[in-house]
Amino acid sequence: MRGTSERKDLFYSVLFILPALALFCVLLLNPIVQAIYQSFFSWKGVAGVPLQWAGLGNYRAILQDSLFWTSMRNSFIFILGGFIVLMPLSFLLALVITSKIKGVRFFKTAFFMPVMLPITAVGLMWVYILEPNWGLVNTALKWAGKAEWARVWLGVPVLNVVVVVLVNEWIYAGFNMLIFAAGLIAIDETLYEAAEIDGASRWQRMIRITLPLTKESFKIFSVMCVTGCLKTFDLIYAMTKGGPNHTSETPASFLYAQAFSYRNFGVGNAVGTVILVLGLALSLIINKIVTQEDY
Image 1 (cartoon, one colour):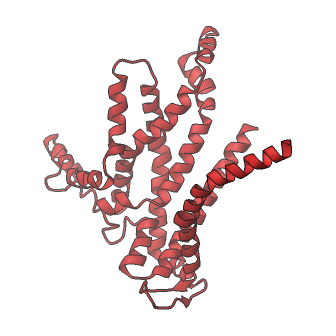
Image 2 (cartoon, one colour):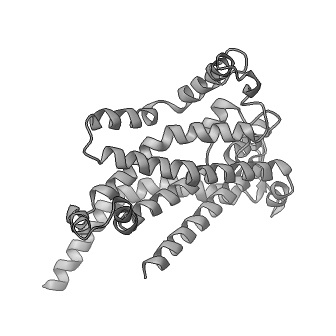
Image 3 (cartoon, rainbow, N blue to C red):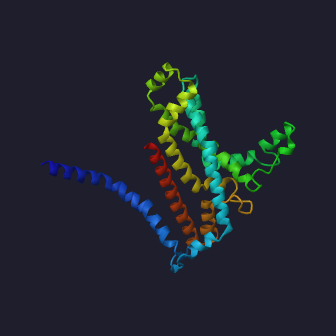
């Protein structure tokens, strides 16, 4: 009887999962498989035109393209900015909204507000703020007597990527704040009370209790940061469109240019496959490192 009941429970469990599994296969898994398959062919994206076998030619093409390596460098800058700026900023904001200070509801709303705004609108807003002739940043520098610090912020190679990275951190600080806040709220208050009785300072409580017990939040942030930075497209396209002269390209914008501007869909799918494999590999490495530290 027990075996029959377990089989019946398994049947109903699978039955409930099937709709979501079908949507996952059709809307996510199927396009991924098609993209990997088409990365080995040359195709201009014209319906009815047969695909031409290219083997590893598309992969050789992108690996020999200096713009691809420029996009990878820019993606690395995004990842570096995520860990150096976004992670401590989000953690600090999480400490603020989980504290008992007055006006905490206002801070929650204010910090999360940029996340709710459309990326295109935010990108255009910052383009106007950074406009070299009448933008707010350069105008403020001139009023402060620091006209020599004024720059064409989105027109200087590398600097333009750093500027977009900082805008990206401003946008997503509120979202990652919630990830860290969830970890902070889950910590038992009695641990802090016991540590305080034992004479532990606020800094010691932070190092010995808060950080170790929010390790899972840091792991989630790390995986989302790495994968998100590898596929960054919308903000770059809204603010620089990959320019000037392709100096601010990211792998995703490079993919878009190859597939939809130059009609090299095989090359574009090859770039997408590289992003997928790299994202999966880095995610597994992060999970492996964190798992080893737990032992």
